[in-house]
Length: 104
Image (cartoon, rainbow, N blue to C red):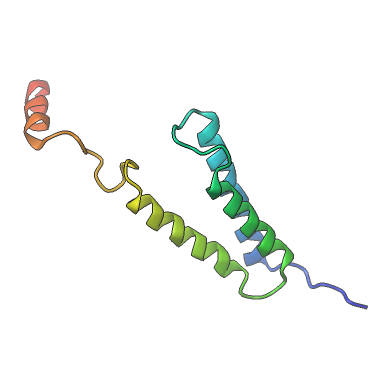
């Protein structure tokens, strides 16, 4: 008989984490974050990866989750308007310094 081996702990954790990432994207859409396409590619990619990790029984499956985490991290830094790299974008240092003196 052709029995499949059970998922490893790392594969289970990776699949659950990928589904949690998808839930995070859905929560962002439901709370009104702007500029999401009708079908968000991030959610589709994360769900597809979760299926891949949970259906394919090979030892390197958790690498898919690590690769996607790196891809999302890089995407957050290169996407304009995310506010991660330059949280004070649009305000000059001079106006911020003036505002802080008013509160002191």
